[in-house]
Length: 375
Image (cartoon, rainbow, N blue to C red; front, top):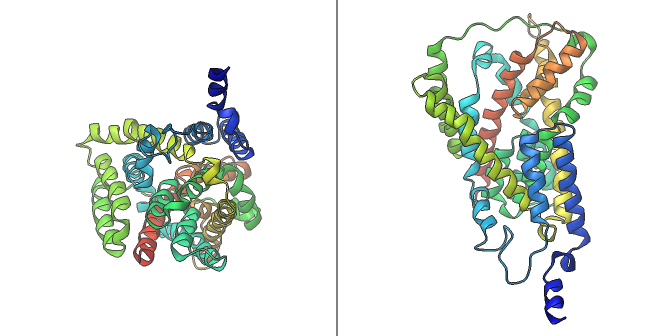
């Protein structure tokens, strides 16, 4: 009986709290959205299962969770907490991204820049709610809809909020097809949604090779804090566009990014242990994150409408919603929205311009915030 009692006292059932149960239900919801609804399964399956793993109560004296020094999960989580995984993700994104759409119509870069307003307005709101400047900066970056950037910045400015910010950022990235369409429909008329844009011009090989080198030098000098993220993004793109490093480019955009995505998603999910995660601050971060993402979407759309006041050849305002850096989901949502109004209107390539500009913009925004708020 003593052995049985000792065994029972060491099971997770004894230490299971309502918070653990709630987080396990959240993990199951993530898995359901990914498997049944096909919402960003490459993100939500690792995160959802990681949430299940992270909310099995630890046994006293056993190093199991990401918060227990020396545990296997703590070593995996090191790549998140020290900001190692995000630059590797950016390397893969760069190796799979075609900047031709942006280079063929440079004015669309402004839409990617306009969408970053969500970051800075949310920062102001977080300050008003009592968060420290560092915490507010880390929360605001959620508006960029860029999970790796959010993780990188929060690891530098507010590591104690890393789990909440990472889950919020990836949740809103996965829910782009749910969150953005109502905003897009609300802020545009049917006539605006029917606007057809001229086909993009052909971009030369020389332009595609010069761009990542020149853009890195400019962005790195403007915001040195973004050097790691921007550097890996443009390095990956140079591997792709140079056509002499195909093996490296293929590794970066396939095997490497897949491995890092698995480790990052799983360890971020495992960090949501209810004992550390379920706090009033976490709930507030989720609310502010949603607000930030909505403001960013509105900023891109409204700026496109503003640009149309001065342009002879009008821009379809829908593509402004792709200014957030959820690549390529936002561009795909814009394309699908345009197709609903006019099946012959193909907006995908046009939307990719502000979409990839948003990736650059959010990384620069993170670099600026890190530079300004680090002290």
